[in-house]
Image (tube, rainbow, N blue to C red; front, side):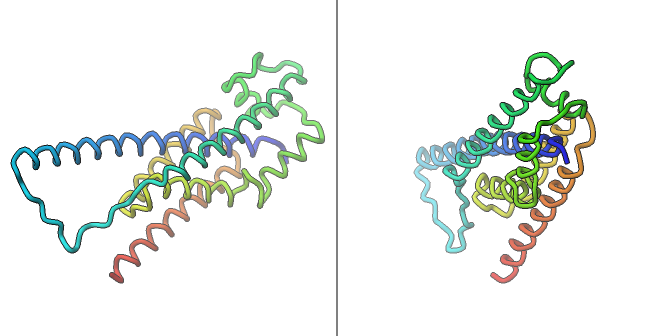
Length: 207
């Protein structure tokens, strides 16, 4: 096992977080503008709005958790990039400076050697119980999506699509099909989105 696996996990998770976060912020801005306009119009016309006893449940973004997950991902990515930059500096015929593009090309090429300490760390990170392993990575992506939407079941499919776009971007950055560990993570996330949608549907049916 080499460090290629951990790279695509980092790319996929980080880009997905960024994509979903941007989409959620845009939706929140639109909703706030619409709600503000409705309130202004009602005030101008002296309209009294009656709240239905069956008012739709509101879902609030868990901003604290969103920020925590983003910061954690950024810290982990910074550590990862430093490890790769250090490794690149020891290789012959590398891609020059350790820019993001150079790093991904360097790792995707597979044309490098890894010292014992780096290999051990990479193996630990992508292990079954590792930070970049399938289970933890897929859990973080789902946690991030739920935190962004406040658990709104109507936005499950939007979050799924945002993840799929993030994964596609990771493949583009990588330069082709991602390694097996990322494909397994993709499948795990899809399954957890299915479970999330199923749980919500079941809850609505019981109400």
